[in-house]
Image (cartoon, rainbow, N blue to C red):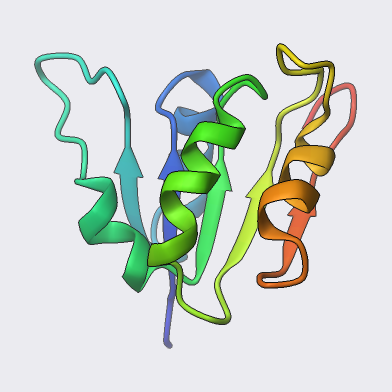
Length: 116
C-alpha cells in the first residue's frame, strides 16, 4: 500500500496528535521552528518539495511567513491544509492568508471546528 508523503508543520499538541493519527498511514516529516533538544526536526527546504500534503499545525500568525517560504518549493499538486482557527496580526484567517499567498497556484483546505 502506497502512503502519502505528509509534512507536518509544528510539533505542539496538534502536531503530536497528527503524528499519532497518521503513524503507519503516511510517510511523515515533521518540522518545528524551535525544536526541543531531543526532537529531530526536518529541514523545511529539504522536506517541502517531496510533500504531497502539508499540514499547518501552527497558529494563524506565522502562516503567511511559512507559506511564502514554502511556495517556491511546493510540488505542483501539493495540498496545503490548515487546522488553525482565529486571526493573524492583520485580522486575517488562515483561509484569507492561503488565498492571498497561494491564490490558484496550489490547492488548499481548512479544517475548522470547536474540536478537530
